[in-house]
Structure formats: C-alpha cells, structure tokens
Image (cartoon, rainbow, N blue to C red; front, side):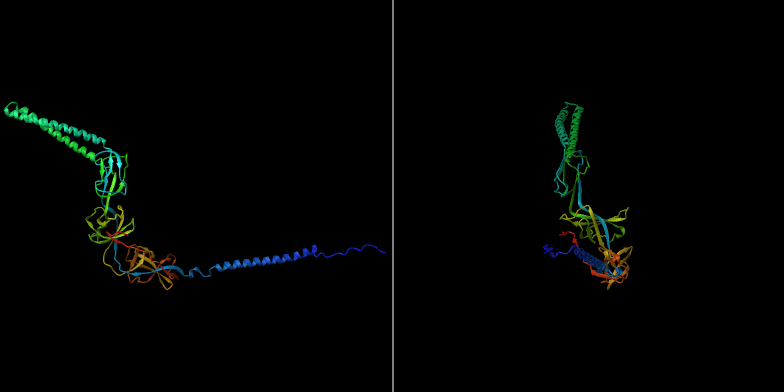
Length: 406
C-alpha cells in the first residue's frame, strides 16, 4: 500500500501576479498621457481665446475721440489795456544815524513790528559824544562867567571915563574884551547845540506810525552817517504806481475806473486812477500814474507786483471762447467746433483778449456753438468725437477799493 503523502493543494491568495501589475500599468500610461495632452490643449485654447477677445477689432481712427466741450458765449467786447507796476507804501523811511559814527548798542524791533511815531527803534553807543557835550557845556559856563565879569568892568570903566579918571583908549579896550567874550560864548553855545544833535542822533525813533519792514543791523555793528539800519513803511494807503505809453494819456485820466490785480495774493480790487503826471518821461516816452488803495487792514504787501486793467473804448457785440480752447498764431486763432458727433476746424481773426477769454465777431462764430476745450491736440478736421460738457471753473470775486476781502 502506497503511503506517500499527497502534495498539499495550492490556495489562491487573491493577489495579482507581477506580470499582471506590469500589464495594468502599461495600459494606464497612455490614458494619463492622453488626458494631460487634452488638458494642455484645452488650456492653450482658453488662453488664445482670452487674448483674442482683448484685441480691438475696430480701427482707432474710426472710433470716436473723447473730448470736452464748452458753449461759446455771446457777450459784449471792450478792449482792456493792461499795465504792470509796483504796489508802494504811502510813505516809507530808512532810519539810521545822520551825524555820528558809532557802534550799535541795541535794536529793539524786528520786521513786522507795528510802531508809533516817536517810538525808540534802536540806540547807539555814544559815550564819547556825551562826554564831549558835557565838556563843551562846562566851557560855555566858564565863558559866560568871564563875560559877566568883563561886562561889569566895562560898565565901571565907562563911568570912570565920564569923570576923566581913565583914558578913552582904556575904556574901549575893556568894552572890546567884553564883546569878544560874548562872541566866544555864542560860539561855544553853537558847539553845544551841535554836540546835542549828535547825542540825540544816538537814539533812533520811528518817524511816523507804521510797520518795520527791514532790520539791516544787529547790536555790535559799526554804523556811519547815512547807514540804513531799520526800514519803516505806512500801509494804511497803498499806492499802485505804473507807467503807460504816451498814446494812452487820455485813457489814464484821473477818475478812470480800473481793476488792480495783486499778483502776490491773487486779489482783484476795483478802483479808479487817482493822479497822473502832466508830462511823459523823455527817455521812455511813458506817462506815470498812480492809484490809491485803502489798506487799513494791512492786507496788501508793498513793493510787490501789481497789474492795472483799464477798459477803453465802447462795448461792441462779440462771441467769447476760453483761451484754453484756442491756439493763437499772430492775430489768427485755430479752434474746433462740434456739430453732432463731428469736429470741424476753424481759423478765425480775433477781436482781442480780456482776462481768460478771447473774443470773435458774431458773424464769424455764432453764440452757442460747442467748442472743443480738451482733447483738440489729437483732432483733425472731420474726426468723429464723443463730447461731454466741461466742468465750470470757480471764479474769485473782485472787491472794491476799501473793501476787505473775506
């Protein structure tokens, strides 16, 4: 009997063999590659479509050009002559020593200080002048005492002459000596007055009510006669001074209404011409005129630039356009008007300019015409435009002379 043990039966563990794994992996690789290629192509197509959608298919030349427009205004035109001048204080002074040379001891004010007439502005070191004045005063007193004694002696000698006790020659000598002493006393008193002026020159005072505009020295500086130390100005009234061509002599007559523009503060003041020179300057052939402006609030800076605008002639009908909407060459002006959505170029002859506007005859440019204000540098005649109204600019009101600007 065969007792051999049968071989154990093989059981399926459920795991694929190595060959099966390799076969499955080789099948998935093409699928993954295919999916990746599809994704890359889809992403590229999306990017190309996005870029293509951003491209403008319409030619820029045929697209309407954005511009801002403003309507031309119908208003009378009156020529305005402008003159540039200087705003000067009513009075001004440069304070300094007149007679002596000395070191500055104190300076009591600085620019902007308000001072009263007679107020001390600065002092000088005048010890030498004080000592000299005291010495001359003492000499004058001594001469006065001698002169009194000699005068009494002359009186007594004259009485002795009447009795025949002295000679006429002796009496005349005594009288002459008395007169000489009197003259010497007068000379010393004159010297005393001079030294007193020198001493008074050591104290510098304000010559009028005003404000300090300059401080040119400090304590320790050495000054001489005619040295300018402190400037004082009176701004209660400001003088606008200017010069006009001789051909405008009649136009700048006293009382003519004008507008003064203060460049420093951008302030416009309505006033009238106060005075006019009766003759022209021989060198420049210009006529000097002045305008008094009330400045009790001390709002106008002096020694600054001012502009005088003087209307002349009679107003005539005209059409005005902002200066910023035109290009000027000599007397010809180029501008663009808008009709519907089309821009048209015009070359016109201007009547003149007043302030921010340029004026044209009404038959050349009708009031109400829409004028291109911004964007005209890129326009050509006949271009299509997309117009929108321009925003109005705020204007500062002018004030009359004597009225305080708020």
